[in-house]
Length: 224
Image 1 (cartoon, rainbow, N blue to C red):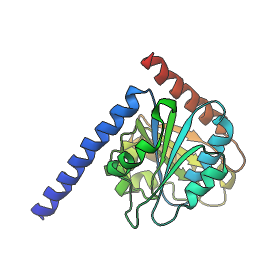
Image 2 (tube, rainbow, N blue to C red):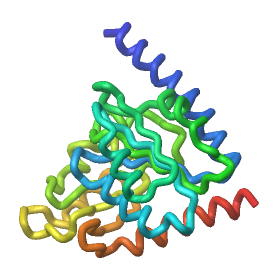
Image 3 (cartoon, rainbow, N blue to C red):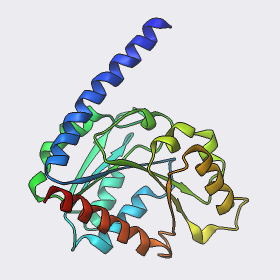
C-alpha cells in the first residue's frame, strides 16, 4: 500500500510540474483556459457547440476534445465551426492529464488565441485530481442526473470554480430540484459560481456567454 501511495504521489507531482509549464505558456499570452468536467451525457459538447455559434466571430477559441475511444466530440465541434480543434483519445484512461495537454499545445498558434476550452473525459472522479494548467474547472451537471451529485463527488465540486446546471428544459421530468442541488453544491464549496441553462432551448445561455466575454476581457486587461 505504501508503494502504491508513493507512486500516486510521484505521478501527481510530475503532472503538476507539467501543468505549471502549460499554465505559464497560457498566462504569458493572456489565454483563458477552462477545463470542462462532468459525467457522460451532461452536455459539455452541446455547451461548446452553442458557445462557438455565439462567440466564434468575437473570440479566437481553441478546443481540446478528450474522449476514451473516439473523436466524435471533436468532429462535432469542427462541424459547429471550431477553427482550432484537437482531439485526444485516451484509449481507456478515465481522464486527461497535463502531459496530454502539453503534447497538443504546440498544434495551436498560442499568439492567436484568446480562449482554450478543454473538454475532459466524462467522469467525476479521476479528473478532479489532475491539474491541466487551466485557470479553473467548470463542472456540468444536468437535471436528468441526481441532485446529490455534489455530495457523492465532493472532490470535483470542491476543486471547481463554477457549476453549470444544464437541461433546464427537462426539469420536472424527475425528482431533481434546483434548490437542492444548489444547497448541496454550496455545502461542498461555498464560493462556487452557478449558472442554470438549457443548451437545447437557449435559456440562460446569454449569461454564460457574457461571463466568458468578461473573463477573457479581464485577463487581457491584466496582461496589458
